[in-house]
Length: 170
Image (cartoon, rainbow, N blue to C red; front, side, top):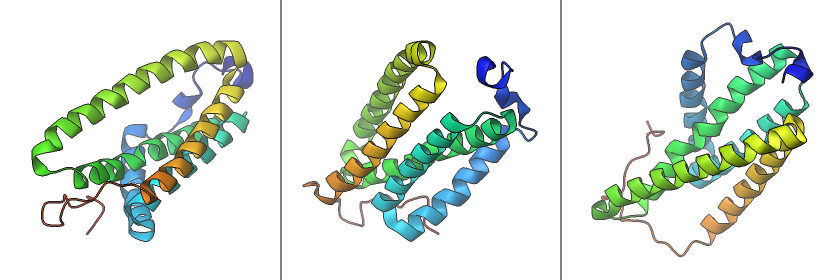
């Protein structure tokens, strides 16, 4: 980033603390998204929006645009989590929920560690833009595969009285 922007920490340019802005963006957009597109569609569209934000981040060269785009990307990146968790909990029985939750956390942590390892070496070798475009491509492919696989999923949902209610519903 120093070579692209002439600064070490472009994200320090944000005037409003990210800890306030991002959760607010997540709550507002997540509710609108899931109400309009449903649980599976909402998750897919948030993954597509994340891919678009990564692409914009890769193409940006000014500090203010990078800082704003990064804040948006950070919010979008985690917005599919409540829907994904609700979907998981709705598809397992009440007795299996704690194990499913633990396995979900384990898988997420493992892939975050792997992604950090791969991205760290790739940023040095190929530069930020190439790695961010690669990550955007993976996010886009994941979104499409998620929609296709969830449409044809052999899993059946838990009866409604045992299912969790999405936090995105009123």
